[in-house]
Image (cartoon, rainbow, N blue to C red):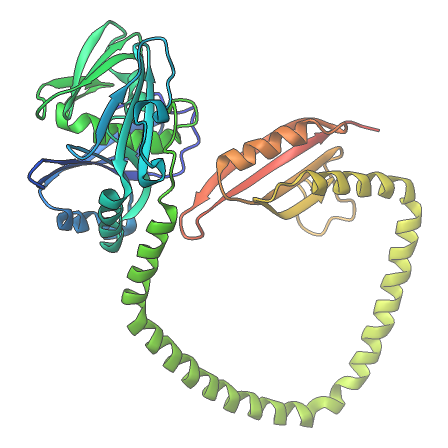
Length: 405
C-alpha cells in the first residue's frame, strides 16, 4: 500500500497494470496487477499471470482502464554515454526512424532508449484493442519505473530486479539500469507491500496513470497509438452494439406510433377546450406587462452595479479555454440560509459562483491560473472536482472572491 497520493487529482479509481515480455521463440509472459485508489492510498486488489495475448480478454470486463508496457528481444536497448543526452539518430544511423517507436529514460548514468519496429508492435496493439481492452497508456521497457522511484523501500542505495531489468536506485532516483538475459527474481518493498520482480513494472504502469505522470515521467513516447486504439474500439463497439441497435430502432418505431395515436387524441381534446382558456390568457398577458414594468424599474435603480456585473462576466468568459465548458455563472449568489418565502432575501456580496465540466484536471488548473490573474479576482475558494465515469468528463464547482470596486 502507498499512502502518499493525497496531493494528486486522481482520475481513475481502479487500473490494471500489465507488463508483456516476449521471448525469442514468440512466447509471452504477461504479468497483471489490479490497483485501487482509496482514501489517499493505493492497494493491490488482484494479481494474474497470463501466457497469451488472448488471455488479456479477461481484463476487459467492467471496462477497467489498462496501462501496458512491452519488452522482449524485439525491443532494442541503447544507451548514451554518461553526461551526454544523445539522440536516437546518433544511436541508429542510416535507418528510417519513421519505421520505429521509441521511448527514452534519463538516469544519472546517461540516457536509455527503448526502440521497436512499428511493423511488429502495431499488430500487438491492434490485437489488444480488438479484445476490448480499455487501454489508456502504453510504454516500452521499464520507462514507467520513474513513477515508482520515490516509493521504493527506504532512501538508501539499492539495486532492484524488475522483469528482465536490474535497476539501481539511490535517494528516490534511478542511477543506472541494465538489461538481463532472463526474468529476474526477488522481492522489493514498495510502500507497505513486498512485490516480486515480475510485479514491479505492472505496479509502476498503474501508478503512472494514477499520478498522471506530469512530474515523474521523464519523457513520453515519441509516437502516438491513439488512432490505432480508436479503430479497435470502434470495431468492438459495433460488433457488440449492432443487435442492440436493431432492437432500439424497432422500439423507437413502435413508441413513435403509440405516441402519435395519443397525441392525436390529445389534440382533439385541446381543440375542444381551447375556448375556455382565452380569458386566462388575457390575464397572463396583463401580468407579464406588469412584471416587465417592475423589472425595468429595478434595472434603472441598479444601473451602475450592472455595468460591473457585465464586466465580470465578459472577462471570465474571455478566460475560458477550449476544453472548459461553463454550465453556471452566478454573481452575488443567494445565501444558503434563505428558506421559505422571506420578503428580504440575503445574498453573498462580492462572490461569483462557477460550475462546469472539463476534459482533464490539468485543463482546470490552467484555467484557475488565468482566473487568478484577473484584476478583480481576490481569491479562488470552495473548489471541488469529481470525475464523471459515465460522461468521461470532470465536473467542478468553485467560487471567486471579488475585489470590491
